[in-house]
Length: 154
Image (tube, rainbow, N blue to C red; front, side, top):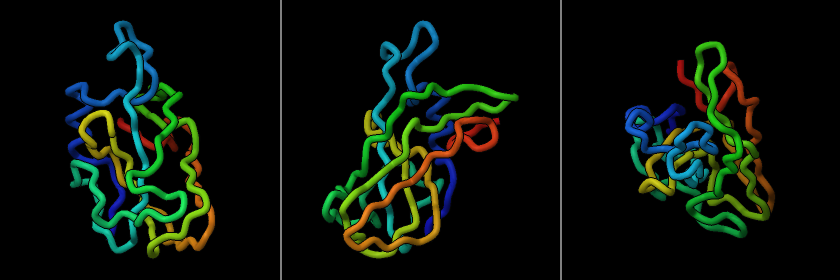
């Protein structure tokens, strides 16, 4: 069973300056304002992913099939993190999409991880169980604000 949440290790890594989500807007910006490469991977409903995980691995991930590749898709990071009403928030700027694949079993989880920083895991997101047979799958991103942003801190 998978459990949704931000990874506990991600919290301390943010304070250590490990992750650069979105384009840098501060001066001086870390790594010349270039965001890290974040990826989104899909996991089987029978996997055991959760906030206690620290590093991405393929245990419980969908098997490669059609256009699904283990390791997932690169996340579009055009939005800079921001603060609204004392809540810091960040949402990727585009939905995650996979086309023309068949799932290797029912899946219900998307894991975000930072492939630029030794595959450190960021968060685990669960949804209703899906099974795909030669089809497409997309996860639509919420509005990037203090109430619905994908990652929020207060």
